[in-house]
Image 1 (spheres, rainbow, N blue to C red):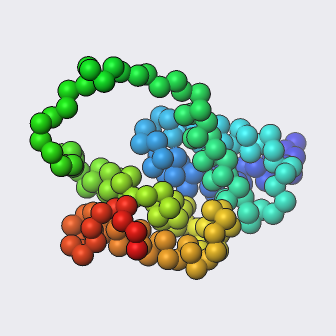
Image 2: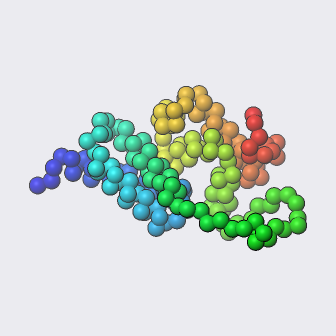
Image 3: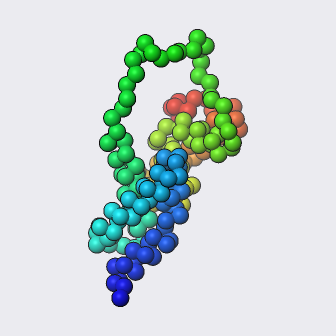
Length: 174
């Protein structure tokens, strides 16, 4: 016989695994790693399911777990350092975008160039489907700040993709 806890967990997995996978894939850019992140997220969620007080808050709770799991990947890694003398630096000055293969990579790379202050709320809205209030709670901001940052993120993204020449650098202050 299946317990109510198991039924609750199964319902969470069925309803939210697609959203979690899309967000994980965006974070890491690797399908297998995204599946691993989602699996680890659900494993941690199962262990802490008793801590979930409101089912309505499950999506934000799981996204938080997923973000922490992704961050843990980098905590465990030791960077490989290369001697500065071994790096070949081109003579050309100025930053150039690498050649992209496909519209998805173009958008992904443009979004990566956004400051996290703008990128995170936009990702939570677009990929996570979160409302302004949910994003505000998740990022510990006011709803007005979230709306402003999402608006600016869209403007900066549009500029990066060539849609508006008035926006300059991705990191410029408003």
